[in-house]
Amino acid sequence: MVKIEFRPDPLAQLSTSALVAYCFEDAPASSGTVERLPAETRNLLQQMQTAGELTGKAFECTLLPWPAGMAASKLLVVGAGKREKFNEMHFRHLAGTAVRYLRSRGVRELAWILGSTEPGAVAAVVDGALVADYDADRYRTERNGEKGIDNFLLATGGEALPAEAEAVLHRGRILGEAQNFTRELVNEPSNYLTPTRLAERAGEMAKRFALTCEVLGPQEIQDLKMGAFWAVAQGSNEPARLIVVRYSPEDAPEQPVIGLIGKGITFDSGGISIKPSENMHEQKTDMAGAATMLGVMQAITQLKPRVRVMAVIPATENMPSGNAFKPGDVITSMSGKTIEILNTDAEGRLVLADALTYAKRLGCTVLIDAATLTGACMIALGAITTGVFGWNKEWVNRVLAAANAAGEKMWQLPVDDDYRELYKSLIADLANSGGRYGAAITGAMFVGEFAGDTPWVHLDIAGTRWANDEKPYRAKGPTGHGVRTLVQLLTDLSA
View 1 (cartoon, rainbow, N blue to C red):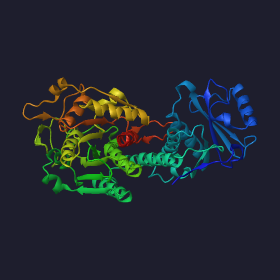
View 2 (cartoon, one colour):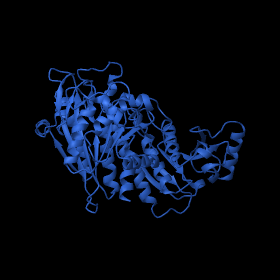
View 3 (tube, rainbow, N blue to C red):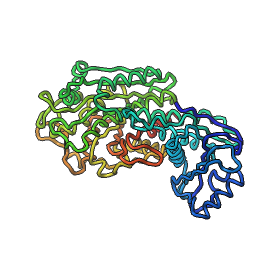
View 4 (cartoon, rainbow, N blue to C red):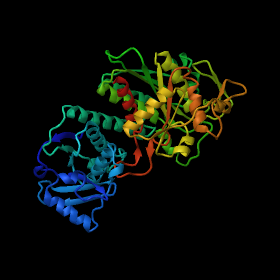
């Protein structure tokens, strides 16, 4: 575990492996936190800027060994880009850039110069550092993770800290560790992270953080008449699991009870409607919605918002076999609605349908689901922005506001009665596919049919759950996108 602490030493006297400052583009070299360095160091940096060796462009890293007038072994200056575009959320990326740059050079300790002790800035720096210190290389014999940071210091330069400083540092750590827990689950191969093992990981987390966890098996799922969930599960040799994790603080009001429903398909072959072989290995990430909700639960039990929350996770594989459900089948969901199967690769909405129904039965008064639901959402929004859908404008707006505050990109897509025509069935209440056009919308609306009048918001994280490109501040692989937004939402509700 990375040790994170405030250090009050004067900056010139702070003995550390690397001291980190930032400066802005199209500004003097002494802008940003560089202005807090000793004069002789600033003068050197100004000379470097004049010579074109220091520009301040976003994420540019300039490393100086044995900087003049300082006790630190190295000084790293990170470019912060344009000052007018800079906001609190950039602290996360700048701290992450510093961590990844220095750890790749064998540095195990760094001190980040705090230019602001505002709560949001401190939490963002800590969160960004922890997220940056993660690599998706658990099964490599030579791991980047072995180059991780041991000590991350927050250098105040002797400035007084606000009373809530330690609590804010703690919040940043909680958020960073929750995202990394989600990323770790998403990154697991499906032969290791079966539905059974996902349930065990949920139980281990719940026990560690004093949450309650209940796990139902195949017979109980069938006894509950979860025909949609079971239709997907019956094709796999791996037994399905229905996971329920509860957070119920004694001082919380009776309502709302927030249901967090996460799609937990630990591997999606497409079933009988089998997927193309190209990139099918990425279908191990089809349980990212489940991992997101477990990360949120890990965070809130430590942050302790005064709101009741329940995570409901239907976990199974979607596999082709002699027992698998087939195109043309008609199934009966837990709600009683009948569904014609047009495409067995549209399975996520089926497991969510029964999970939403069950969450309502357990007493949830607001439903929020996260799912790698549609490739169509990736076509619309790429791998950058999560699609947001919902009947209830108040709750959609709350989620979008939380995303903005948390620094995660989310965008609302429409839901409209006209789209319902696309997933009507001739022989059942609903069809599980509305065709190619508007597929992100029809997929979301299909799920929403099972929310009924209960306020409901759907997050399609198909694009944002994974990054195929490495950023200066984040490794390639699972992102943990959505955790910060939902934690922000729940803490906002508490406030």
